[in-house]
Length: 309
View 1 (cartoon, rainbow, N blue to C red):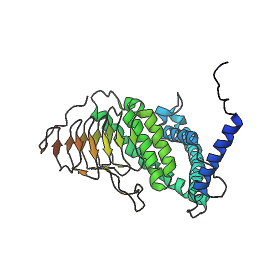
View 2 (view 1 turned 180 degrees about the vertical axis):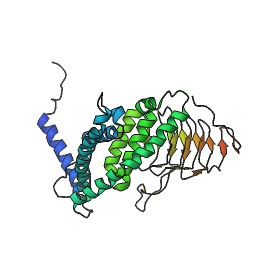
View 3 (view 1 turned 30 degrees about the vertical axis):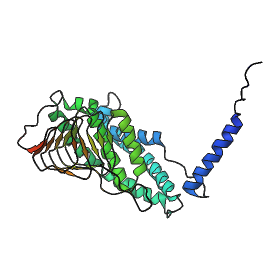
View 4 (view 1 turned 90 degrees about the vertical axis):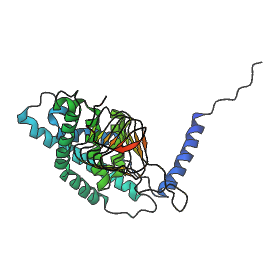
């Protein structure tokens, strides 16, 4: 007689157990009210792809798009993208309102207002991206053309999506902003929280493994290389012992800072204008303007900018 074996669980029992766990989770999040519809990750990513095509129709629009058809394509793409975005924003607002402690409001009107403000920023975003594209071209001796930079550079792909996500975050749609940021992270290997404030002419060279935290502030003409972390040094606790939220905990990089590969800059410290952070160092204290930080020591001296890998 063979060894005794327990019979496998029935599918019906597994389904029932999962249902009980699901209902308990739903009640803890939304109380006894009806479940809100969730925003769609896939639809949000598709909306951002349409917005990027509208911003750069020659590069991300349909093949063979002629100058005479470009405005019509941009208008069609924007109309569809903003209509879809309005629905996703409304769903996010309804999700927030469904929490037991939330005060409900006219989500359709609020979504209209938010998306209208977002649409009004698209021209400014496009102008900012032009500075980022030129920074990448001018900062990389391997770049052969601006078109190559737009089509091929992961740093440009990441900052393009970040500038869109940052506006959503700033205007009050943080969940959609995180969807955009995490999709960008998957595509590029660059992790930028949508809350990070980044100035013009920003360039990430190579890019893989770069992490930029939520409350980081980055000035103009800043250049980062692969593996750089702009992170928190420690996490404050609230009165209940949980992690505190919504407080400054990431670095400030002033204008013209360069941070080389593998460096970690941690905590709410300031890296002064024109400072250079060498590769593979940990920085947890302020660096003065024009300072140079190496593995051996920190000093102030002139620096010619060096060359990337």
